[in-house]
Amino acid sequence: MNLSDLFAAIRIDWLERVSVLTAAGHASRDDFDAELERFFDALEHAAISGSPARLDPVIRSWTESATQTDLAEGRANAASVIQKMLTATHEVAYKCLGAEGALKVLAATTPLFACALEKAARYEMEQHVNYVTGELEEAQRKLEHLDRTKSNFISVAAHELKTPLTLIEGYTTMLRDLLAADKSASLAPTEQLIHGVDTGIRRLNEIVEDMIDVSLIDNQLLSLTLQPVAFTHLLRLARNEMGPSIQARGQTLEIVPFTGMKEVIFADTERLYQALRNILNNAIKYTPDGGRITIGGRTLPGFIEITITDTGIGIAPDDQAIIFEKFSQLGKVQLHSSGKVKFKGGGPGLGLPIARGIIEAHGGTLWVESPGCDEQSCPGSTFHLLIPMRGEASDPKLTKLFSGKLNTAAHGKTNPISYHPTA
Image (cartoon, rainbow, N blue to C red; front, side, top):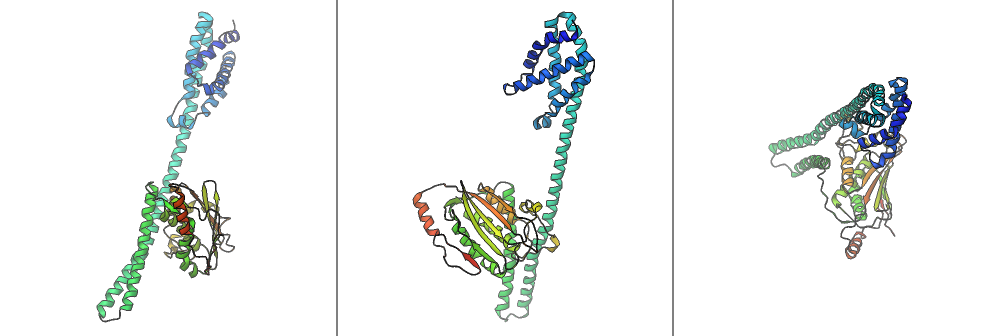
């Protein structure tokens, strides 16, 4: 019998034996059997022609189909299968062909299997090396980013903490000198100096509190105290607190009624308001004097979406992810300002990361949309807050009572802030 007849005689038994040895799963059995037939045909052609290269396309495709888990764990799947094929070839050849035929098949295939094993091992090693190299490059990029973040933190923290500390130190020195010079002096200057000290201390405390919040969010330790709240309550608080800042910048804050505005949900009122306030502060900073900030929203299945739209300078597409990274700085640190409402005034870069962390802790999400950044045309930005309508302890009486209290918000319009009550 020639080699072609010998291969035909062992084909069925060989395929069955290899399938048993490799224990192919039922879900991939058909695909695996097709690959076995493909390899067997290539092996037959290589044995007849004496060219091991006939096996290369099959071996290459097998090694390139390795999963991420295989690459991460360094598994040699192709080489393992080929080794089992060699074992199956010995067993089936002696079983189906007798000694003479088996020796003829083994003499033709053993060198081919040796060559196939060597190539499979080399290809899989190349795949693993490429994977490890990619992982190392990714780790290097992350380390470089971490190093930049650390550097930004040191630089920004030094600047942000230095400003209020210098303020405290200067006012304290002046207060000490004033009291030492004239103990009978009027208390008015003293009170003014003490107020300056209080301002510096308050700003320093805000920065420190923000750093603590970032640490809690990073370590997934931010705890929420859920209680019934409606956005009418939060928006009323925002309207009252942001009033002086809005007026100082000649801006207009408009609250547009939307469905779900009075919906009572369970959330951490203080934390949710903190997130809302941080986003509004950002809008005030990056909207020129005389600009407009609009708060609207809508209900979605299981969620309430709040939108905060400004007529500010906008955000470049490449920066729309960066602004949610802690200590991120789009401007120069040397030009930083601790002013909370000054146009483009800098800060420690924690407001938006904290806002996102709070929203995500509630099971929601926060993102921004903007055509781009242009200080001349001011395309503006829109921040989207998606909050789950969590309904824990849904007592109808409690909901009705709570909604009634929230609906006592002021119905008049206050210039430059306008509030539109729902019907």
